[in-house]
Image (tube, rainbow, N blue to C red; front, side, top):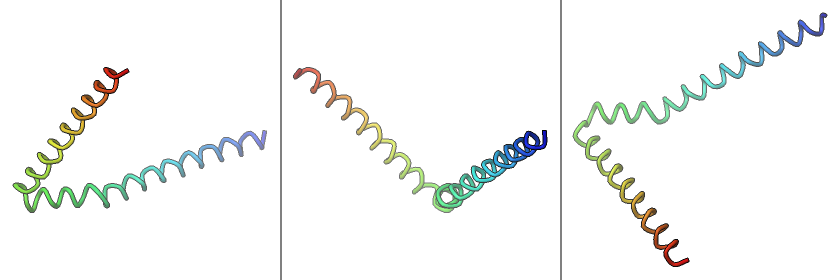
Length: 77
């Protein structure tokens, strides 16, 4: 009975530690990536909009280039 209770307490403690670890990772991610992006967007909104549009255009271009390559590859086979 005692071992059973200790096992449940250990399981709950490990869950709490994992929860705190995930929260810490999210906080670190926010500090490293999200905060500088937010600061950039607030301080220079026009430049931020241009940057986002450029990245979006690059993503779309890469996406379509990959589609075209895969179609050419399948047509050769």
